[in-house]
Length: 472
Image 1 (spheres, helix red, strand yellow):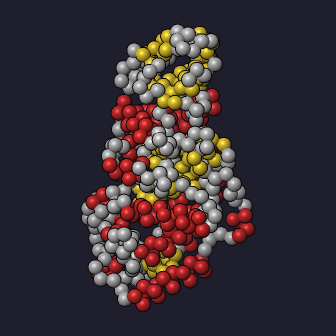
Image 2: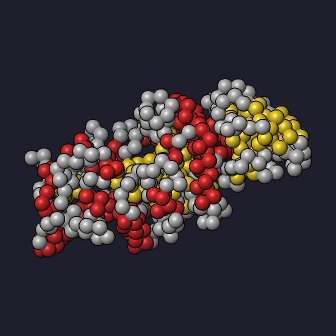
Image 3: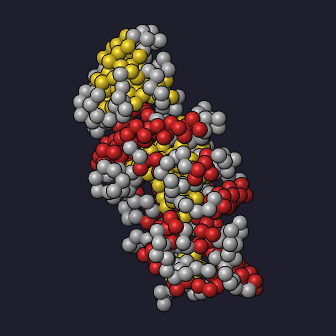
């Protein structure tokens, strides 16, 4: 690979630094409006969950797009989520959809100048963070989305040599066409860092873009950081950017929480251990790819991860619950089941993936989010333990029912469909109240009293998605 002479590299860096100083968004007055106390962070009481504003939170969400900062009617969409009790969205810094803007200045001739950042792009981003902050919504931010860097989206990308005035293919090492799926890592864009190809032409522009994002994001306490969308990149790449983000945060006197999202659907795949085995860098894990699995396997895989990190527990996030009748990753019913298994299974966050691969914030999603918030108001998920070995559920078939419990105090049993199981309360003397929550509507049935000290048969009232809650 041939790069520009050193004096041109230095000149580029100088131009970028001047440009950034001249166009940093926001103002001191705006920043002063953001309360930076008690940001999103792992809970001190139970580090498998998050806390925000000093209180433990269960993150529940659904949204109609991945790159939420680019959509119209953003505030109304967030209002709808908040009305359901939702407090969690995903945002990829992606620009491949119609009507999106890219992060660099486009000249009159249609080409981009990578030394000039596009204010409109970053203003959209800050609009999202502020609107989410005002509604107590956590934003899980993904810095890079591999789908912008291959096939048709690459043809419009400012980093494509033919689309900018800053370098040629020979100078940058980037081709004008990449026809393979981005999982192949055909594009060396994701190998620019010093530990790999050390592309001194490309990397300054990448850093300038992320620097500008962090100038904005670090002012907000409601942001979690993910380096990539379902990547197959060399592990040096996310390590570089995770360290970059953390170093920038430290310089600003902040503490932020980062992870990587790997592509493998099997959580036992060695890819995921690149994150799980390095809590010194990666503060939480996103296990969304498990949501390609179904039924008992889906539950068992999540329990395997919980056991794997039990020596140093941390939040396990599900920012993408796949499954919609309109998509190819399972049905709507699969998506709803994954949503509830993840909650009862001890996940720190769940969000319905955008259409067509998920049900987004459809009416169906809205009602299930509201039901989950109603359950969490009555059942302390932060203190609960999933019954991964079915120790208290008896006469249970695979995938028939799932239990989470605060031993001796409360038990929540999820039935994906009709079923009946035995709940062993022989060690729990005293009276309990049993109530049924119809997840599809959020309606509680009238409670009945039952006695502990024996085994009880729990029979789902009928249909799909019922939760039986027993409390003292």
